[in-house]
Amino acid sequence: MPSKRRYVSPLREQGATRTRELILRHATELFAERGYGRVTVADIASAAGVASKTVFASVGSKSDILNRIIDQGVVASGYEQATAGVLALRTPEKVLEALAHGTRLGNESQFAVHEAIHKALPVHEDGEVLWERATVAYRDALCAVARHLHTLDPAPRCPVEETADLLWYWFGPLGWRTLVIESGWTWDRAEDILCRMAVASLL
Image 1 (cartoon, rainbow, N blue to C red):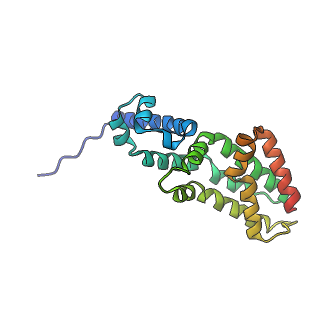
Image 2 (tube, helix red, strand yellow; image 1 turned 90 degrees about the horizontal axis):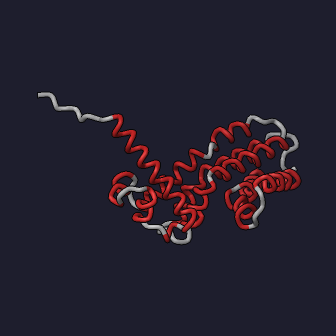
Image 3 (cartoon, one colour; image 1 turned 180 degrees about the vertical axis):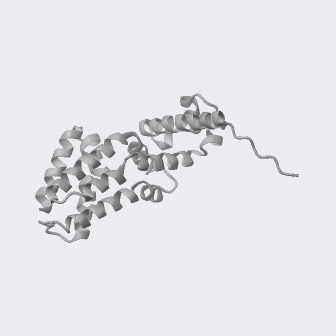
């Protein structure tokens, strides 16, 4: 006797997807505003208008939620497309201008995600792994840009590894946060200054 196939309702699946998105959006906002350690699953459930058991069933624990937020943020930042565009450029100044603009757009659009991660690091049970999960693709992209710069004329005056470190220092998430969040600069001003610093220092 053939086994019965489990019926899958498209409407039910769409509803479950919307619920997950709602939970993750409110969790991101709460983590960014209050800090990971001060937010409970009950807080997230209340903000999303669902029961706590729905949060656990749909997304998982608070740590699971943060991991999903990070993974979604990495994809939503558009870093792959932005990096491909930068690597297609053939003059160092244009590469650095595009890098400044691209990282600015990624950090600006993912501001709440970055704040959620930043505030979670001191209290998360494994902050080092969390930071690695959040930044490994970002740093790899900047390393690729550093290698590309060293194929162009004029090439940076320092070794390629040092170029990659400097790009991370200027254009990594902490560089943007220092100027925009902690110092109150506009995104436009930060982009302009960071780009000019990179051009002056490397070229």
